[in-house]
Image (cartoon, rainbow, N blue to C red; front, side, top):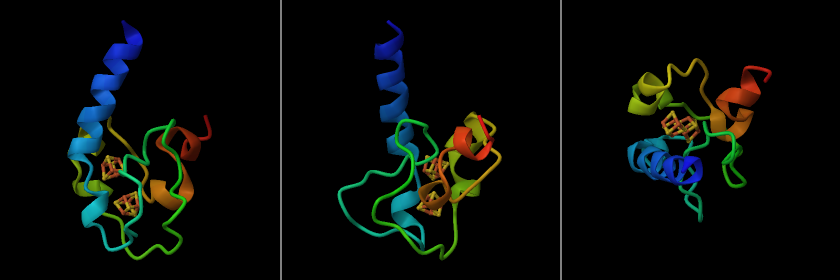
Length: 81
Ligand code: SF4
Ligand code: SF4
């Protein structure tokens, strides 16, 4: 059941993700959620023009400590894990 749970969680994260309203966002086929290890960096966003992850409910939910996941890698990656 773990994979089903993680699918539900992932869908919830995508629905909460604020990336599409961020100044750094580049519209392509991505859905955001770059803080997740299995999403990882964006293939479209290259320039850091501000990050609004701090205002995202996912940051609070998972006590995320970083930002710019689209360009710098997931929370896990930036934590050196
Ligand atoms: S913390 Fe950032 S990357 Fe993660 S879901 Fe929220 S806005 Fe998207
Ligand atoms: S990870 Fe941060 S900088 Fe990148 S698109 Fe999402 S809110 Fe913007």
